[in-house]
Amino acid sequence: MAEIDELARRAVATVTLLADRAAKVATGVAVLVGAIAVVVFLIGLAALDGAARSVWVVIGLALMIVAAGAPLLARWRLKSVQRSATELVADVRTLIDRNAEARRVVIDTVEQPAPEGSRSTAVVVDGRRFTNLRTVAGTANDLRSLPSAMVAVTTFPFLLFVSLALLPVFFVLGVVFLIAWVV
Image (cartoon, rainbow, N blue to C red; front, side, top):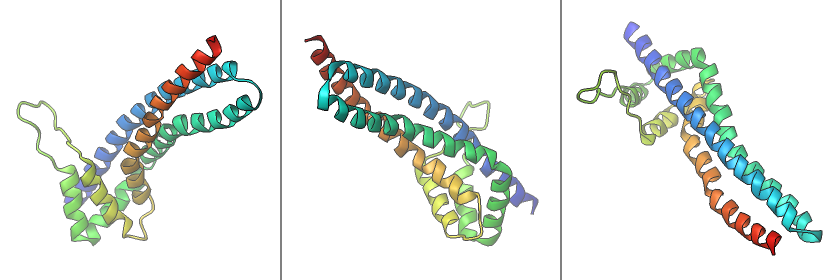
């Protein structure tokens, strides 16, 4: 039983460490993309008038909400993982006790040997392992925190991709609006 408790605590520590680092990245992306979106939005307001300006207000606000909102949603989800760490330990312990496949997936996700010459224990995590853990956790109906934690961790890359994919759109629009404003 102590072995299962320790494995559950280490699994949750791994997930919360990943969530903390990812939340910091999401915050940085939200600030960067949000600032660029606001500047382009304002340039568009200055460059356009009449019906085109009204259309830009609607489209520009929608783009800003998506571009800055996706990483903020990721950050909010990841911070909720950190807030529910105690419940996560109980959920992981329950999952490991109940299901041999879950125990193997948790061990595969958490147990990684430290690289040669490393002074600390390194946790090398790849998305496939967390997706496997998400799949196993999603099959249990009585777990409260674990499924949402796995959704937060596994959807983080997609949400950042959505935000970063809009950067070229903002750059192109910014150049077009700047030219229209100057000319």
